[in-house]
Length: 247
Image (cartoon, rainbow, N blue to C red; front, side, top):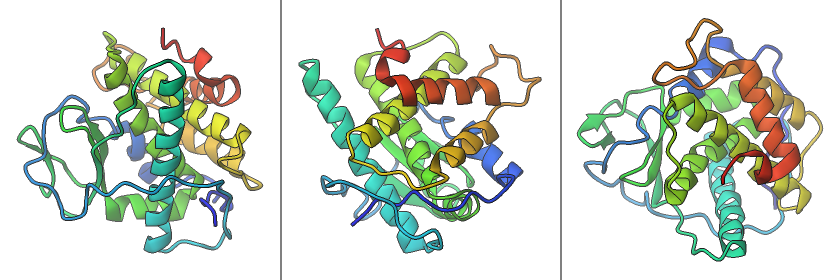
């Protein structure tokens, strides 16, 4: 039984599709409750046993959904352990909501557009356009699903810890570091097992979602250049949470 991330990297990572993936991923981070809950959207994945990778040829929607569930379960087990170690009670996010149409899910009266993924802090949920995300999964590889979920979940942890920076880029690069820590620590604890090529997929995938080099670092919505994002992800991956300036 295994959490898949082990598909062959697909050369240049579908530039435009991937570049949108995390540049939009946090656009609704401070917004409020969704207008309505989707049936079954509040179901959490079961606590996972040790996870390994599956065959590289797997690309179905069902397999994508299983990756999302596995990534959620591993993230929740990881953060629960971190909070317990520090003497705090961990509260998982309320739900993960896939949507298919613009306006199907909203935060604080603002409809989420297509081609997006977002953590909504006041509603305490992650939502993503399922058709767009599955397309990215097929083009980029399944390891990237674990990174994307880890990055968005990191924003939920920032809220729980009361972390709030003056500039978007600070929040986003820290979330990249935290995503790296969750993945690296899970591999070291054998909660996850990487297949050949997965580290390269992380490296290429994180680099592909960097901001345009001309984007001002202080701009609202800035996430960091490819170099900055890759550096922060692998700092967390190799050095754990002590590299992420959590205070």
